[in-house]
Structures are given as structure tokens and as C-alpha cells.
Image (cartoon, rainbow, N blue to C red; front, side, top):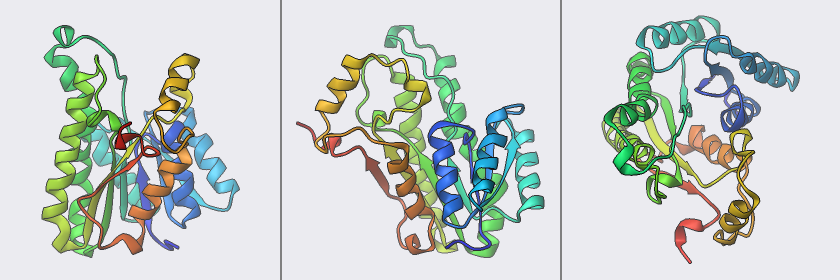
Length: 249
């Protein structure tokens, strides 16, 4: 159990992030649920956690804006204490387009979430983690990083940059007792995938050796391990949670 420890899960007002927040609360963390300012989902997730006996609160912020990130971290620290676990899950729109139609602005929009956001949050929480000689940072990337379908070039490029950030941080921060890892989900049906055609779902399922679709709980379980005290000797790793799909045919 993580008695007295505090976790921030970005983009946790719904979907995968909400499941990760609920799991960490069950593990004993006080959980800061994050969404954009005005997102009613934050309070709903926090209430669910509190109803189950956990500790949680909603903290609105655009995690790509430096002033809002600093205010966010200050508010969480004032409410629960310093952040021990940072789960970088927030994402934005993921448009699909042929590479000839993808401009630099499209790349920057993806980099804002997957590189700029971790850098801003890292600058806000890492000094405290270094002083305490303890910290857990978990990035959520995607199977798309290493298995990019056509039309996802900006997203795949940003996700690979996020992986590179994970590896460099892991090497540099290990002497401070801070681990930095990433979890790469396969396709996991959540609210934003509700309109995926059934034939696409069936084709994906046929490519998964485990014979079933992944669930948000599968991803949250991997995050739970990496956020735990027991994972203190695991850093710079990428855990792919895809039912074996990455193994190929």
C-alpha cells in the first residue's frame, strides 16, 4: 500500500486515465484527478474514488501551459502534499492524414502533449523528488509508436519522442531514486473508440494472440506496478500491453 504517497494522473477525467486514477487510489495513493478547466468529469471520478473509500480531488489545468502547470502542482501539493508519482496520460485530438498533408503545426500539436507537457511537469515536480530521493514517472505511449498505420505520422513521431524522453530521464534520474518508464497500450476500447466499425474491431482482435481485446484495467495494472515501491529497480523500460500483438503473425 502507498500510504501517504500522492499521485497525479494527467488526463484522468475519463477513459483510460480515469481507470488508472481509480487503480492508484485502490493502491493507497491520494490521487489528483486532472482534466481541462471546467471538465465535470474530474469531480465525477474523484467522487467515485471517495465513495470507494479512497482519497482524491479534481484539479483542472491545461498541462501544455506552463503557468497552469505550476499552479496545478502548487494546488496538489497544498492539498495532499508533494507529488510522488506522475502518470503522463493526457492526450489531445489525433487526426489522421496522408504524410503529404501533415504540416509542422500538426507535429507541434502532438509534441505539445507528449514532450512539452512532460517537460513542464517534470520541471515542476522533479526538484522535490530529487530532494526526497524518491519518485515514479510513468509515461503512457502507444503501440502506434512502433507499429504506425498510414495517416498517423505526427502522432507516431511524437510518441517516439516521448519514448526517447523516458530513456534519457531514466538514465539521468536513477541516482536520485527516481524511476522513469513507459507503458504502451495496444488498442483498448474506451469512449473515444465508440464509433470504430465492428469489422475493424474484429480484424484487430484476429491479430491478438491472447484472443481478446485489452481493457483499461489491463493498462492500469501495469501502471500500478511501475508506480509501486516494489518497482524501484525497474527504470528505462517500455511495457507493451497488447496481448502479444507486437509478436507478429
